[in-house]
Every structure is written in C-alpha cells, then in structure tokens.
Length: 334
Image (cartoon, rainbow, N blue to C red; front, side, top):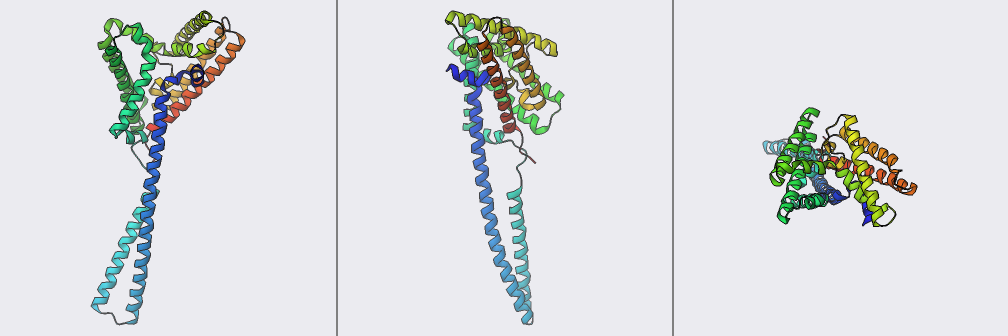
C-alpha cells in the first residue's frame, strides 16, 4: 500500500475517478467506431444502388437513342434521372456524415446523459472525497450520518464543477467569467458545509482543505522514511510543517489567496484552463523544491533523493490527469 501511494504521488485519492474516465473514453471510442462502421456500410450500399441505377439510366438512354421517343419512354427517362439524382444526393450526405467530426458535446457530457454512468462517476468521486476528508471527519468527531452528508456534499460539488468546466470549454468563457463561475461554486460549497459543521467551524474546514497538499504529502511519503514508528512520525510532522510554511510563503509571493488549492487536480480551474494549470504545477513544484532544501535538516540524503522522486511523480501525475480530464470535458473538434 505504501509503495502504491508513493508511486501515485498526491493524487492517489482520485485515481479511481481517473480510471472511470479512462473507461468512459474507451467506451465512447468503441461507440464512435461502431457508428462510423455503420455509416460506411450504409454508404457502400448506397454506392451499389447508385451504380445499378446508373446502368439502368445508360440502358434507357441507349434505347431512347435507337427508337423514336414516345411520351411513355420520355417520362421513364425523366423518372430514372430523378431517382439517380436523389441517390447521388443521399450518397453525398452519407459520405459527408462519415467524414464529419462531431461538434458541441464533450465525450464526458455524452456519457453523463446515461443515469447509471453518471451515478458511477459520482460514486467514484464520493469515494475519493471520503479518503481525503476522512481525517477531518475524525477530528470533528462527526457521526456516521454527518460524515456521509459531508462526503455527499463534496461529491456533488465535484460533479457541479465538472458541469462548469464543460460549459467553460464549450462556450469559450473569458478568464473573468471563468473565475466568477468557480468562485460562486466555492462560495456555494462553503455555505452548504457551514450548515453541516456550523459557522464556528467553517474555518477548520477551510484550513483542512488548504493544507491537503501538506497532509497528503506527509502521509504518503511516510513509508519512505527510515527509523522506528516514533522516528517516522517525528519526520512526518516536520515534513508537514515544512510544507505548510512553504505553501503559505509561495502563495503570498504569488499574490494568491491564502486558501488557494495547491493540488492541481483538485483545483477545477486548472481543468478549464491549460495556462492556469501550468502556473499551479510550477507553484507546486517550487514548493516541493523549497521543502526539499529545508528537509535536509531532518531527512537523510537517501530520503531527500526519494523525496525528489516523489515530487517528480506527483507533478507529472497531476499534469497527466489534468490533460486527460480536459480532453474528456472539452467539446469535440469542429
């Protein structure tokens, strides 16, 4: 388990959701290929019919040239020409349909119209949120019902943000419109969570969310630390505190809000904007580099080496997950 966590970096909790999207891509590709094959088969049938009618037309024209034209023959010739013209038009339409690229809807939006598939995706998101916020629920001493409600709120928030991302990518919203949309969604989530935890505790939720990168990094890297349990716990705590301090410093230097989500894959703005994603990835990379410099005071050279490997894996996995999700949520090429 520890090895798996290290390999996946700080996005291990959402791998299940990414796998679902990969399966959706495969399913959608199969459906698209099946549709294109059907169109091509139809096109071939039309071509055969067209060829047959062409032969009929040639024969009729030959007969008409050899015999004096009468009204019946002339009408038949006109009829045949009309049928051939119609078939040519139908054949051109089928060929165009086979060659045309889909527009408008994204792969993901096409799949979420299926109620069962949408539920599957939401269930995966809920599982991911349960893993991420399990410690928070324990710290708050939530009942089973409260924990379930929190996880439902977080899963619904993910799904609503997915809808926003698809709308942004589809409609080409401006950076200002994009920010307003996501800011409103953030505010809506806080209001709902506040109703669950109470206004006096909403700051604890915000702090926990803000420190997710620090918490997940310390927890997931703990398996690479040396020493007994006490030694690992002490190093893990120091790593967490170093991550916290460097995160706050990096956000202040970048002029970002103190509650800015530094885990790229959990910051939905990054899926909607490749430019924002790159900034967030570089921000996280810088935080890790600074933490690695400080960690030499309590980590061994070998542990520092492993931490750099952890950093590289975390950043690359986030980059790949963002790219995959953006492709899934963007409209098909026009």
